[in-house]
Image 1 (cartoon, protein in one colour):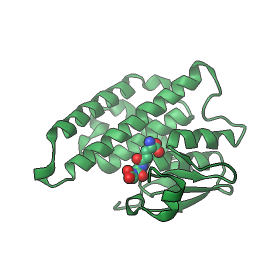
Image 2: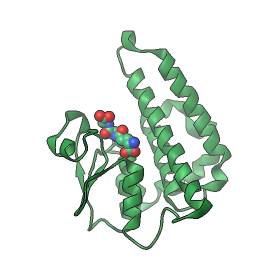
Image 3: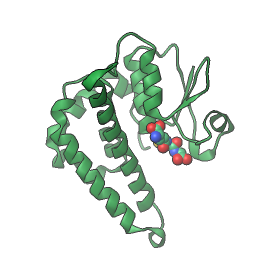
Image 4: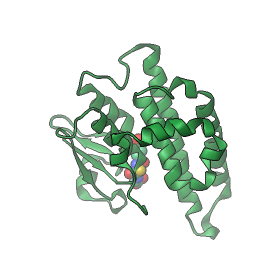
Length: 201
Ligand SMILES: N[C@@H](CCC(=O)N[C@@H](CS)C(=O)NCC(=O)O)C(=O)O
């Protein structure tokens, strides 16, 4: 199977880290691509034109990182997403919050990266408020994930890594010191070391 990614995509990082955690590297080849160039092999697999997308041995390609992670998790016995019950929805909720945080950081980055005359502060300010609320919620709820080794915790750690990459000025370590140890533990895992964004990205 082939997972199409871009090296800085936090959604792709989640899938890549899960592949490493589950020792599936020999079954899933990671292919780097640049989605903004609209490469034809990516568009043929995913009409949305986004990474990550997983080309499977059988069946249509899977897009959207939560769906891809669900599929990856189904490939081995060891579950990173609980199969059922309250814990399943707790993990999926943490993933939704973490992915939503990434969406906000990405939206803010696109908005603030435009020429000044084309920027619309309504959106960047709205996203900044939502980022602050989500960081506060994650801090408040940290007991639910900070000691866990599952997809929810992995997704939150990947989102914090994306804060470092694309919104370092927010200074999340100063504002939310309660999350620092949690992030450091994930950053030290082999799966996170191997998927860290390239220097200078
Ligand atoms: N909800 C999707 C988001 C995927 C996404 O937005 N990927 C970005 C890269 S980080 C992308 O491919 N952007 C290209 C575009 O928006 O055209 C997921 O979780 O996989």
